[in-house]
Length: 159
Image 1 (spheres, one colour):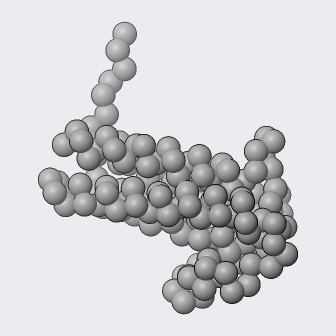
Image 2 (cartoon, rainbow, N blue to C red; image 1 turned 90 degrees about the vertical axis):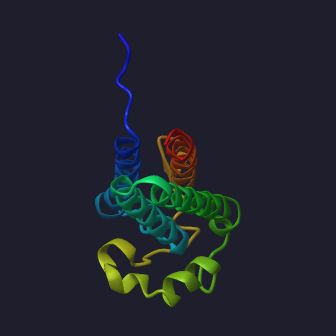
C-alpha cells in the first residue's frame, strides 16, 4: 500500500507545524522544566517562527511567489542551524551571552516586546546547555533546522 503524496501546500503546512512544535517544546522545557532560554535559544525560536510564517504564507501562494517564500524559509533554516552550532560550540562554553550577536539582534529588533512569554531572554548560554534524552537542546534545534532545510528542497523542485 503506497502512502499518499502530499501536495506542496500540505508539505509547507507540515513544515510550519514542525516549527510550531519546536517552539512549543522549547516553551514546555522553559515553563514545565525550568530550562531558562539564553539569547541564542530565543534567536532560534525567532527563526522557527519566521520559517513557520513563511511556510504558511507560501502554502497560500502559487508559482514563483511560493518558490521565493520556500527559498527564504530555507535560508532561515540555515540561519537557525548556524545559530544552534554556534551555541553548541562557542556560546555554551561562555559564562555570559551579553552583547553577543544573538543578544544584539534580539535587542535591536525589540523581539522581547512582541511576546515576553515566548521571546524574553531569561538565562545565560552556559546555563542553557542542558540535555534532553542525552542530546543537548541546541543539537535538537540543529536537527530540526536541517530537517526543515531538506524539506524546503521538495517544494522548490516539485512545483
